Image 1 (spheres, rainbow, N blue to C red):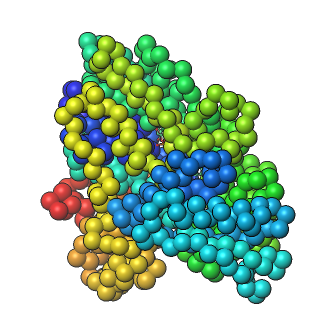
Image 2 (image 1 turned 120 degrees about the vertical axis):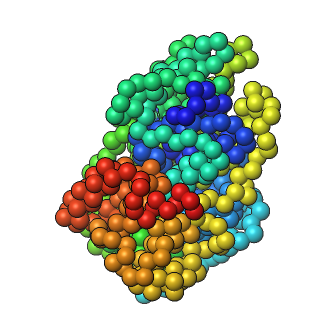
Image 3 (image 1 turned 180 degrees about the vertical axis):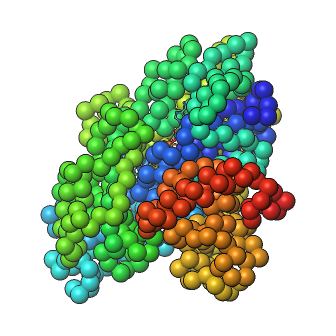
Amino acid sequence: MTQTTYDLLVIGGGINGAGVAADAAGRGLSVALVEADDLASATSSWSSKLIHGGLRYLEHYEFRLVREALGEREVLLKVAPHLVTPLRFRMPHHKGLRPAWMIRIGLFMYDHLSKRTTIEGSKSIRFDPAGPIRPEYVRGFEYSDCRADDARLVVMNAKLAEHKGAEVLTRHTVTRARREQGLWTVTIQPENGNMFTVQARSLVNAGGPWVRKVLDSFDNVRIDKTVRLVKGSHIVVPRIHDEEQAYILQNSDGRIVFVLPYLEDYSLIGTTDVDYSGDPRTPEIDDDEINYLIAITKDYFRCDLTPGDIVWTYSGVRPLMQGEREDDEDASRVTRDYHFEVEDEHGKAPLLSIFGGKLTTYRKLSQAAVSALKPWFPGMSEPWTDQAVLPGGENMTHPQPYAEELCRRYPFLTPKTARRLAFSYGRRAELWLDDAQQEADLGERFGALYAAEVTYLMEEEWAQTVEDVIWRRTKAGIDMSRQDRERLVTFMAAQSGAGSERGPASRLASA
Ligand SMILES: Cc1cc2nc3c(=O)[nH]c(=O)nc-3n(C[C@H](O)[C@H](O)[C@H](O)COP(=O)(O)OP(=O)(O)OC[C@H]3O[C@@H](n4cnc5c(N)ncnc54)[C@H](O)[C@@H]3O)c2cc1C
């Protein structure tokens, strides 16, 4: 770390920590973002990857949350056009479940609770009897939300924070913090190296599922709030239908399950809600969740899905805000809204802890969190992130035309690769495609990945391990052979020893 005292030290490099770091750095604070593992290594890469209002939350009268989330779809489409794209959802009408009038009212509210400028409204539909949905489902509804690359949204927020002067430290754990003479003294344990301390005028605890654990490691804090940990799992299978829309399926337990087109060749099916008491670092899908997700899919789709079709699964832990009366509440009904606890000592050294939140609302949450620190930093500037395009999204409204531009400029790229690059990196792809004339100029291949791409990820996006590269910066892990993975391990080991003097990404420093 380059400073001994920061205005703000943010604990946790998930979407909320990265969002807070970017917001605060842009408002003039000196900021350090400290993440125990990799950026987005926890809940923020295990989501359903939707930027959505949350149609289901209307049933629980969560109008504030839904309005804010609906509005954020428009903002994020604008500021992260490469990572957030519109998606139509189809809901088959199930005669035994919610009545059609109720769904129509819900969709009407969804269309009107917040201002829509680009997002299409909802409508009633009839299913093609020869389509992928079982013939007993004749009618249904269609509406809009957005999908996102959750992990890359985190990394690009960290990048934005860095562009605004923040320091981003991954694989460093905050192990203790105490107030001394009006400042926080924070103890940090690097993954490899010796413990050290830094000082900060304020702290934001964005520890997600660890928010309570982080508080427990601090001296003399008076907050007793906690989070309810609820596991959610997804399965990924070869694509079960060819339509471009996603499906939202109602289940008889009142829950809904999404079937989302994923990475061109797959369907992503999820999620579940299971109370969780294990280590938030290592949640895993269980057989009941697999059977639940397969059963509901087969209730609606003409397909013979079996557990043997699953190519990948992932599970994450939601850090849900625990209300006083919610102990016995069904996990799927617990609010997805967020809450801050702020405390200071004699007007100095504030600590703001984040409870709850959604990927969708991270920007508003971050803005509100930083604004809540204004009494301690009266000189901070006004909120700014609603107009701040995330790195890679410059001069773009949708990644598809940019993918076509990439194909013209780099004719050796297949249209599929160009789409992958446009939807992952946006214009930052050019930083490592650079002046390549032929595929060989990008170096060795590791499955879908190029050596130049991996070097860029290591030098510019904090990737240190193969997991960082193939499961968070990209999803190349799904199709990667064991041999390619082993070669990638060797390549990355050689790169980390080689320093930043060589490789295409070294040119980024001056870009
Ligand atoms: C199954 C599932 C599906 C979901 N789907 C959606 C969706 O489609 N749309 C949506 O909007 N939301 C969705 N969510 C919710 C969303 O993913 C979460 O609200 C969000 O990712 C939480 O982010 P976070 O930054 O608070 O937590 P995290 O991403 O968990 O980040 C916390 C970070 O803190 C770090 N940390 C912890 N302790 C320390 C320490 N002592 N020192 C340093 N670092 C530390 C951790 O390593 C971690 O990286 C879903 C959640 C789940 C589980």
